[in-house]
Image 1 (cartoon, helix red, strand yellow):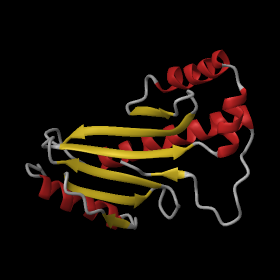
Image 2: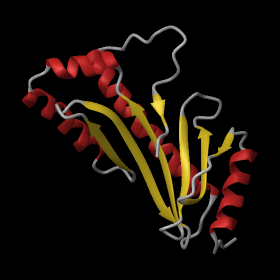
Image 3: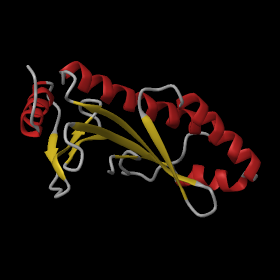
Length: 171
């Protein structure tokens, strides 16, 4: 089926997500035609967002991200600037040829605080369930890569008892 309106795309995407048993929360956002927050992978505490911005007709944006654990930010601070730049450069090179984009949010001292991933596509090409899930998967794999890279470099961080998963789905 061809989708020509954001409302058609919204209904199809919501149907596909609910068919696959995702928890779908609609986010009230005046800047978008629709904004869903879902559990991905299914049943996990990890979240991704599916957004159709009003200013970009036909564009669908899938977002997820990870906050850098305090243990890891402390170890980044202990590195020299050159060591940090080399570490970040390895991440940038490894993510360069993925089909999604990323943004490393840094503080004023050059310490990574969060990394966000986005997968964008337009529904002027066929909007399909497969395309949607390919985007969710590439974002998730990129997140797993970054978590693994930080854990391999700095060790698995200690998390306070009862803390939620460190992944965030901010837009």
